[in-house]
Structures are given as C-alpha cells and as structure tokens.
Length: 185
Image (cartoon, rainbow, N blue to C red):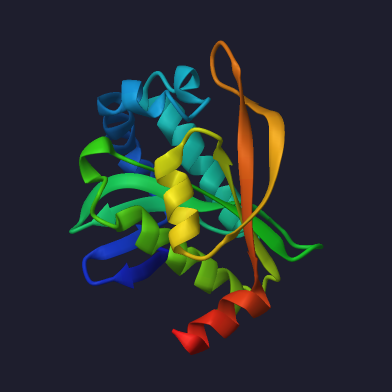
C-alpha cells in the first residue's frame, strides 16, 4: 500500500478497491457541495464508478505518473488529492484535490497540497508544480496564496460545470523558488 504521511494523523493513501463504497458514500454525502467546482459528479452514480476511478489511480501510479490518493484524517477518508498525471517530459505536474465540507477549515487541504508540492520537488525531481483553480473558488485560491504559489494567468472557459463554463486561475511554483523559500522559512 502506498501511503504518504503528511503529518500526525494526516496521510494521503492510494485507495484499494475495497475503499470504493466508502469513497462513493463520501462523494454522495457531499455531492451538492462538490458540484459547484467539480465536473465529474454526474458520472459517479454507484460504488462501481468509484471502483473504476480507483483502478485508474492504480494505473496512473504504476505508470509512474504520480499518486492520486485518499486524504485520511485520523483514519477517516475526508477527500482526495494528488497529481493530475505527471508530465515526465517537461518534469511538471498539476495538483488537484477536494475535501468533504465538514472537514474544511482545519488546514487539511493546505497541509496535503504543501506536502505534495514538496514531494514533487524533493522525491520526484519535478521542476514545476501548478494548481488550476476556478476563478470564484476563493477557498482554493487562498490555499495557493498561503503556500506562496504565484498567480500565473487566467484560462478563459477552462472547464464546463454542468450548464456553464468557468475561467481558471493558474498558480505555479518552480522547484528553485519552493526550495529556496523553505530554507528561509
């Protein structure tokens, strides 16, 4: 089992097929909340859809394209985060995540994203990490800002959310900037 220890009681773990029902239940309990920012909810209608997703995360990991895992807080699944497949040629990755509504405001997403950025640079030897965030998703933008990722540009009509397009703001940080800042911190 692949498990990244983010901090005491907080980890990112590659899910097992046996986690499909738990994942589906978490998605179902947060469906209306998540639907504001995530386009895939209408494609997740049973634990079988969660099984297929988990299988795709295993394939991504085994292909060397990074982990997309469950966020566990005190051994409870509270969300997902990881790399939208790593671009090996350009040595970069985009990080994606979501967290259950009841688990917000505890620094969980911030700590997981910070860990994945650091892991990308120190373990995977990537050169750049990005976050692509919906223009009005202020909570996710605050995470990027808090972690010191620079605002790069705006992608117009970057994502279709059920009945409308949304713009995305792109944030990024280079390996050098991240590691230099860590030394100062």
